[in-house]
Amino acid sequence: MTISNDTQRADLIEGGKRLAAVIEALRAKVAPGVMAEELDDLAEKMIRDGGDVPCFLGYTPEGANRSYPATLCVSINDEVVHGIPNESRKVLKEGDIVGLDLGLTHNSIVVDAAITVSVGEVDEQTKKLLRATEEALTAGIAKAIPGNHMGDISHAIQKEIEDAGFKVVRELGGHGVGALVHEEPFIPNFGHAGTCPELVEGMVLALEPISSAGKAAVVLDADGYTFRTKDGSRSAHFEHTILLEKGGARIVTG
Ligand code: MG
Image 1 (cartoon, rainbow, N blue to C red):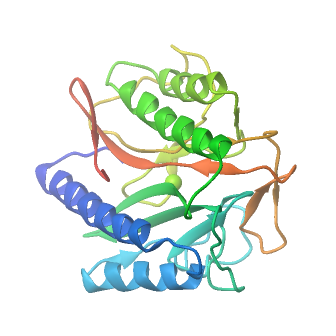
Image 2: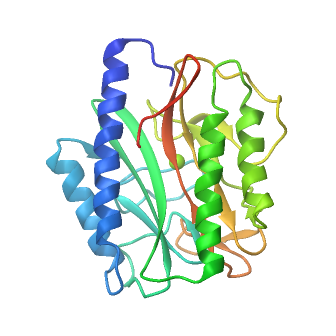
């Protein structure tokens, strides 16, 4: 969406603050032995206690044949995105990494964010993957300036991930957000600077670099939601909802 008045802006910022608080609580709860379903329960409880609505629960993305069954996406190791926390027993183990992707609706405004967290101590290569993917998000946000082009964001994200020796997952990417969970434009995590539509003040975007430590190819599980790397390598994902303001982006979910 494009923010057109002060009320929308205030609701967006408040929603983002609330989402960030839930995500920090989830991060703090991640530990060996914790079940994905417990994280999902905590996310749903915190969102509803705040008077807001989980926006992934019951949402049917384009192309899906059923609605998403949980509040939170929990994607472990080779699971790239949209891992379902509450349909099988998923337990975090020492050395795993876990992607937590969450959205909520506050006063009709949708915000979306994700982090990937280490479970206990992880190996050096995994640390590097997490660092590069988070830095790719920072680099993309730094290019999200009115007057720049969408390709500037895409290129900055790609460069950060590839310079670190990793691959960009190409089927998935960022998107417009605010009025709906997924809006135009789709924002690829690869591309050429200076190309694609111009960025405009007031735009609300979810930027979300998604990387692979091995090959970039992904496959969709039989559950219709969980994407995995085809070669079984680990994947990382970081996401913020941002608002384009004069001169730069405000991180709404930070
Ligand atoms: Mg998203």
